[in-house]
Amino acid sequence: MRVALAEDSALLREGLVRLLTEEGHQVVAAVGDADAVLAAVAEHRPQVTVLDVRMPPTHTDEGLRAALTIRQRWPAVAVLVLSQYVEKRYATQLLSGDPAGVGYLLKDRVVDVDEFLDALVRVGSGGTAFDPEVVRQLLAATTHADPLSRLTERERAVLDLMAQGHTNASIGGQLFVSRSAVEKHVNSIFAKLELPGSGTHSRRILAVLRYLGS
Amino acid sequence: MSARHAGAAARQLTRPARAVAALLVGALAVPPEALALVVAGLAVLVTFGRPAPRRAIAGTLRRLAAAELSRAARWPATRPVPPPPARCVGYLVVRLGLGLLGGAVLALFGAGLVTGARLLTGWLTGDPLDDITPSWLIVGYLTMGGLVLAFLAVQGMIAVAALDQRWANRTRRPGRAALEHRIDQLSASRAEVVAAVDGERRRIERDLHDGVQQRLVALGMLLGRARRATDPERSGQLLRAAHEESRRALVELREVAWRVYPSALDSAGLPAALESVAERAGLPVRLDHRLLARPPAGVEAACYFVVCEAITNAAKHADAATATVRLTEEAGMIRIEVHDDGCGGADPAGPGLSGLARRLAAVDGRLAVCSPAGGPTVLTAEIPTEPAGPSCG
Image 1 (cartoon, each protein chain N blue to C red):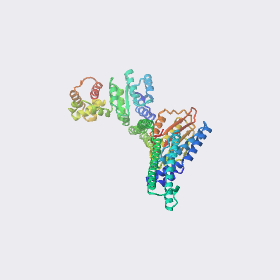
Image 2: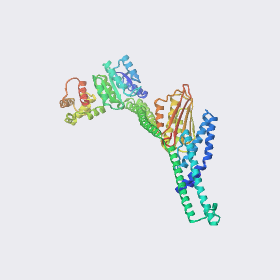
Image 3: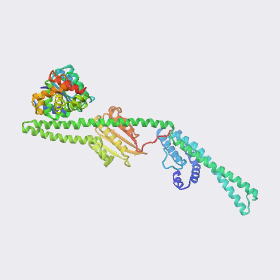
Image 4: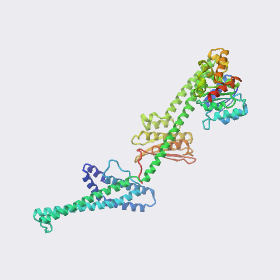
């Protein structure tokens, strides 16, 4: 994949470039601030852009704002946002547009190299990747306690993974059940939460995330 | 001025005796004090417009007033804070009047005592004073008169002593304006303390995030890559790099912890902590530490952070080749001077220096920055070793 990187810590930027290169991805730009990343995206049109939230000059949410701008201007470019802390606000802002090709991970998740690379590929190919921690917070803070409490434990586990952006096949692999069993759980979840269960995979994830965040 | 020595002796005496002693000392001090005031006035005229002698004269007058205030307030346990020079002169002038009055009352009382004694001894020895023969009528009449005069004289002494004390207390006590000013000052510095604390916390969070955490994430990535590498030699390389990175993360963590609070400050004191600042500075720092006693913990920490900030600025922003740090103490005031030969242009309103000024305000200290473009930069901080009460005037 063609990847653009925006990370202000030179140490991490270097590490990410090496990791992605080793994996056979092509890093078209590696920059240290939000303005530079917008310029790089305009020039190279990467498949996916990885952005750190806190970047100069103010070290607050420059990266997130850049990600939202990229989603608006170049919808074909996927964004994977790395955040210092889980901020529900950021998650809901990222979800306000088209969720296909959006990812939001805790920065520390980069340490789980396999998961990070998996999320990157997922986002780059038009899927979603939300950090388990984000989903956990959304689940914990959701105001829809009733329908959630009607879910079985297995359904909760499936919902958790689905909200992170995993496909049915991937969920089945992680929970050691067949794909058809996962589909059954998913349908049951959508019925209990009274959500429209049709549409593409990412549409369904969006429905779930928005439901949790509302 | 021997008032304080006299005071030590007088403290042993009873209250009335102390009041009489205070009056007596006050009366005896009138001539030298009057002379001192006249000399000071002449000296001010002669050295008109030159600050150094004027400062010396003002200092002398304040010391004189402080001694007087101690005496008039019957040698209290705490030494009074002398008011500003102008008020000292006003106080001393009125005090001279009171001293004269006290002297006059004492003289009357003394004269009465001497006259009574001479009458009595005259009668007893058969050589009556002024040929006044002791008949019952005369003895009764003179005894009555003597007692009334004695009563009046004692009342006069009490009144003068009370006036003396009240005038001293009025001079010592800060006025309403001074109290209000102090309250404003305390409110402002309290708000600044809170702001300074928040600023520090923000800095610590940034330190942890930008330093330690990035290193740990990089370390984790190296280990992750090592695990994924299929070639054993490659994974060995990555592991070595990870090991090195873990060392660096530890160093970073130690640095951050040290910046949060240098533990050596508590255990080894200011000179040791400042020496390690000088060692880490990245430029040669000359340290000249002349504090006589160890200051209170809060003052010590403030001193430490002043030097830290100044040296960091000199190394990071001013590109200085050398820096000099001087700590001196005079009259309950610690003075820190940090001098660097860098390019100057330090901004007192910048986050570092303004944070420092706030920190100093919290301990009643002051910060002055002199940093013309092109250098050199001189940063001066003054911190009282004792918290200030409301000042007079």
